[in-house]
Length: 95
Length: 485
Image 1: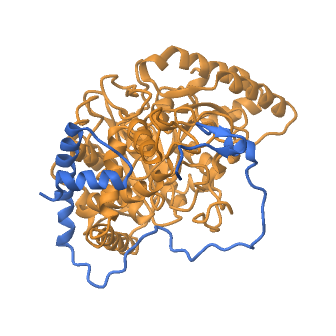
Image 2 (image 1 turned 30 degrees about the vertical axis):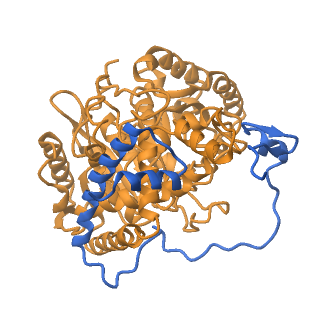
């Protein structure tokens, strides 16, 4: 087994997801199959190979530090599931 | 020929000469949508009213002798491209009512060139899939056989072009999501070089792989669309300042004296024999046109799928963390406490495939596993790119099948994620290496399903790609067919 049911539950928490018992079992078995398939990467010798994390060979893109117009308040809030005045409303965080 | 069946370049002429009007054209396309949409389900949203208004204005511009290369042309957009004031769902419940406050750069560019927008097309949820079966808004069907999938994730953009429900469309390609459905639906689809087309306003899936590109009825239209959408965008930090040539200028240059590489790793056991023979036939056509075809090797091909299914889910797990039910999108009603709200919102809002990939990515990036998965995959990704760099020292373009099989049946692979992932086995490498690729129709199976051939070229060599693709298309001997709907 590459990944256990308990690990799946832990990763689900990290990802802010939750599953029913049967879902967890299905995910555990499918993730196991996929992770077993990934094992084949261990056949490749990557000693001293730099990781490639972006497809374009670019250096950082800089621009002048100049304020540009940004999204107005009302547009920023227009899609909010719950809002109050000029704020997004969420369940109480601090007691 | 009916107006909705024509290409951009044919319509440009008819519109400019006054032989037809943008209003007639848009009515023809809307009529076609009304006729076949209940069979294909290409669209999530059809923009009948605004398209009609835009057509009216387009005719006004044409009368005044103004207008751009796409004036009056009805274009469809994958529902992952943000459109100001028009719902953009990404095929997901979590964005089912999201109305973007701004336009994507490609939308601005298309509008600037005169295009009008006929609708937003269906797609696999968050572009994660190869069959357009994971959309919250239902399954899109292949116009060539309604029992079959159209490919994915940009399935609706492919079927809308194949079924003449628009003249051209845009999709996005993270591991083959333009080229594979183009092949399975018998149209042309291009994934440009990473950085060539701005991703500003494209809902992010895997940011180091995503790229926007066109679906068109032929290669010439692909060049016309690329002329409009390619170019530097200061709002997108991976967008590049490399000059954009006039891509239509490459179309008639031919392939004589050009070298085309045939990678042995792409002609493997398991590939459908009708697909293989159609692609071999395409290679023979190129040779007949004077291209030099040579055998090449891309030794790390076998590892592309494993690398992709670590890199893409890892990036996705990070990108999709933003869907928390606070700023936009769906929020669960059960939300007495913040953590509960996050978990319920995301668990109710995402579908199974999206959750599977978030889980995979979160696991691969989690403490203790990062080196074994993400770092290892990124190192092998380096070697995959190096394979291509080496190959392009000896050839101008590479030819492969686009997909190992023609369109499969709806439901056939939904329970087996690995089997589904194998649909992208020939298209993923281009995204990992950042190079451009195009799929062009190269024949039909005996059951009448389209087959696509893929051409790949080095970074920013879209011109070369269009040159080879156009030369092939003109001499392929593949008769243009239309699906019988």
